[in-house]
Length: 467
Ligand code: NAD
Image 1 (cartoon, rainbow, N blue to C red):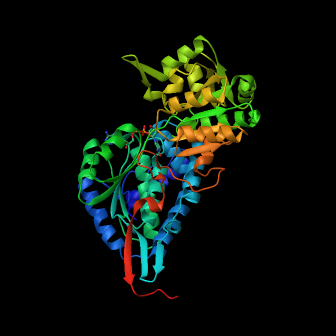
Image 2 (cartoon, rainbow, N blue to C red):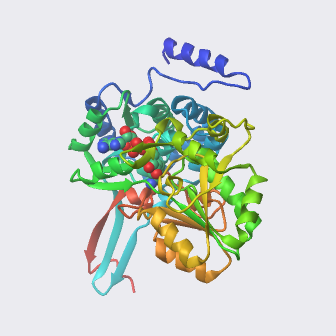
Image 3 (cartoon, rainbow, N blue to C red):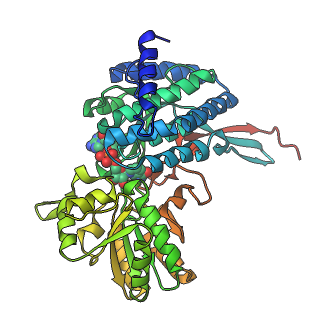
């Protein structure tokens, strides 16, 4: 190990001691991080050709090491993400990294299929694409790199990332971590690569390179559209605006706690988080008062207008998010409208009508609009409209099977959570594996190793049919 690198780590470790620990930022000699996209592409191509000779068991050993390193470095990754992007909460980001480490599927996700009969045996196996190009968001920068890497390596691929420029240090720290883990497990150098300074040009070079056989984008509508226009096989994981319905059969107290926990998790950055609430009028007061006793702060009247002008910008009559406020702590929004608030406030809540921009715009801020409704028909109609056809995520608290079923059928989302916080949908307190790339637009759903493979059929006629 180079001396410069050691002294950088030592300095950072010293800095990181103490309660307000600063994250360890390794800026030089990051494994797999290149100055140019051309160099990154050539390196990963070489690594992939080498990796083709590795066994599935060796892939699994590398993934186990990535899990181990991610758990060990979860706190540092979380701090780094918050300090670089200014978004989210360290304690929640730690949980997200633990989730990635513990619940991202590995090679067990690849399932062969077989037909046997009078004509012999036909086998289908899930094969790598080769080198996959992945574009990652600022909202889950290291989580997406780690989760994608594990799934893509499990599928037998190499990966080149073009991370969000505003989260490149965090993403590239994760690329370095993955490479350290791979090397320790006996894998090839540069199986996962990135660029030091990702730009639109590096992204275009990646998308157009013949080395890249498949593209994956996790982000807003712009990047998904760009990828789907590339002419290559692409997986697009796009935006959402998840509604949550609470009807009058729900356990209202539990619903209130679950919604506060889900909507405030990582300051509402997750694309699956509750972003507007439709509640039956006859239980609305109870829901709101229980939310208030569980960390939510209710604002009313002109305070709502003031907050709208903080969170959103009116562009030619259309509200768009004020990016400066994405993922900020709830109390800061209250301070901005002149309310002295406790730092422990998790979520700002307010009552609005269904057309309010707090309902219609995907804000990714710990601000939740609540709309009173008179029936399940009205709730479903308004919730489906607020989801804008993203078919991403939707949630409901109800014990009425008909209401649960009707909403699920109407909203057609990739994730639908009943009677739990939204994050149960990615395996946190709910069954099932996790992912940070939820592909609604292209239909893969919650991506995992199988999503990053291609089916290959092998046919043997008149043999291996043993009955
Ligand atoms: P973003 O769309 O601003 O950026 C995402 C990535 O796309 C970045 O790397 C960015 O540099 C790149 N990008 C943006 N426009 C591009 C273009 N035209 N061509 C090529 N690359 C482009 O998103 P963000 O603010 O970082 O993340 C938040 C958004 O991502 C939200 O809309 C959220 O719902 C969505 N998201 C979706 C998922 C999912 O799994 N479906 C997961 C996380 C975030």
